[in-house]
Length: 108
Image (cartoon, rainbow, N blue to C red; front, side, top):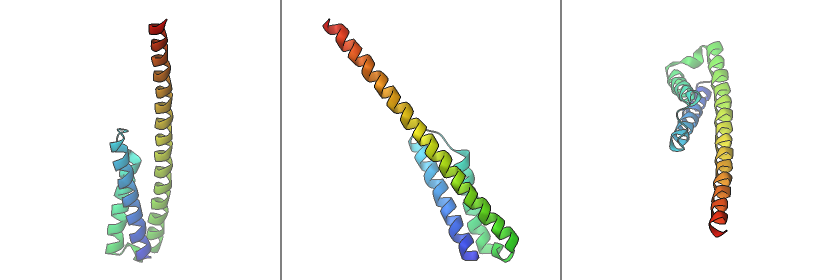
């Protein structure tokens, strides 16, 4: 059980950290879910080192919470990225149409 907690904690910490990095680099801001995921991951890794696995019900609760948080955070991250891409493509089409209208007005 200790190894499961350790690996799940590493997964949550790495996943949350990568989501934070991606959101900051793409100027989307900081995600509270990603911060929480990273914190839960770090606490799970620390808990696995101090004997959290010996308290079985609590250990399974931590596993369930960490897995749920990873799934919810990943879903939210993907949805936000898709919305941003759609908004950017729509803006690009509008700018192209505006440019083409300007070119037509200059010609005629």
